[in-house]
Length: 470
Image (cartoon, rainbow, N blue to C red):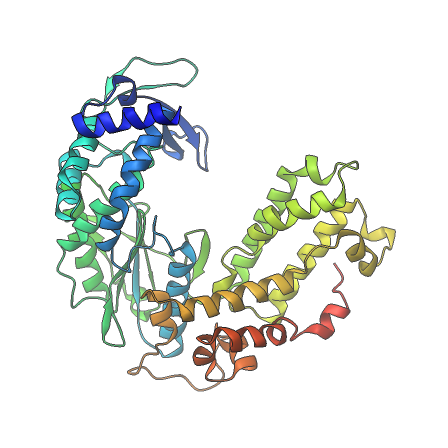
């Protein structure tokens, strides 16, 4: 099979002629969230030839390095060694430090209407060409798109129609194409003097695929940036959604009707926003996010109840499912958290309740937690949270890739002034208690940092020996 595919792929690379079957796709709709009666809450996915996907992956492998060389540190989507955690941490650090030093921020969370479905194809080819992709590969991709047709499958299959815009969702190469288009859009914006001054370098936006946030220290500049982004994006086929694009600020001027208007539409100010799966609040509180994580985790538990409630399923198997599916849901984003003792306690109580539920034990049964822990042998959520945060901090500090997550961690606003009194809990406070004020320097030494991990994880060892009641 492999030799025949190799011959086929080499022939296509040489002739640039695409098999007709590769250009056909069937579109199905996957529900994202919200009202199932609203078509806007569905994501179209293209089902296409598996052999084409293999070929597309080969092309992707050949152009990835070229495109990534042109991607700035502002883009963390679809890139090796970048993740959502990088940008979540960057955003949390900005909010924490700007509030602590009494500086004003304005942040725009940008939403595009059906971003992947509306891109202009000519803009795609121009973007790839300007970012150094070989013309042969551009022509091959272009030939696929030029001949592309699709039909929608709901209860029945619809008739075939040509695809004139957008990228093929489900195609391995589509995410990189979208990132290349966004890069060209931002290159056409003159924002070198806009944004937040981070040790002499301006942070004016972050990107994770089509999740964009813009930064400014005043409302007027942010309004101009949003309008410029909207105007430039339209050229690529992207339309900003004014009802889902939100503004977050810590300025007192909001009460004085400091409006931000884009395309003659007034944008809404919000005090909280879900960014890359984490609820971000202007007050920096983690309370609502912890409640969200607990609620989402219980939903995950119940979605897997056939496993957890199966009396014949060995506990070792349930333990694997719990630690691979449940714990990541509960602790998603914990690398960026600054939790109080009360918030950590809520996580412990949640885990205790889940273990009781999995074992089918009620609180009224009077079974001690020590006995429950011996039966489940699940990893303690407190231990997992602290290990993840400590290890990620060390990894972030030692990376040889320049990222905003590390730059903002090592920065503080020199032109700001703290208020009197004790500040809210900061992300690095727990690290300082173990590694001292030079924790960031120690984190760069892998061996020294690893030697301190146990002390960080077991800082509340006494409380672990006395499990919290649920």
